[in-house]
Length: 130
Image (cartoon, rainbow, N blue to C red; front, side, top):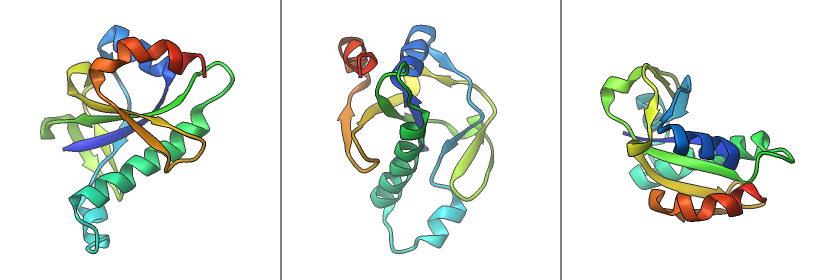
């Protein structure tokens, strides 16, 4: 399942170095969310969840955190403990190998720029400087 997590550049750097990230929950296309938004296809649902994470990432940033980011993961079912309307509880730490994309959040939540996980090493210093 594709899930989304609000982050900042300093948090992403720690995750990149450690290769493991223990968080309680992520934004996910839960049954409740999908059933209450029948007008949206899978791509639109994923986009709306990334925007929720982007809004959170803007709130996480401060003068020392670097750029607001959203991390997209592909996570197997055994990682999930339960679901509410838009989030999934996690039973295990997320792993770097599950990262599918990083989105840099612009001045507002719907201004997202996509980056491949392989680009983190060359982009992290720019993100930390923001």
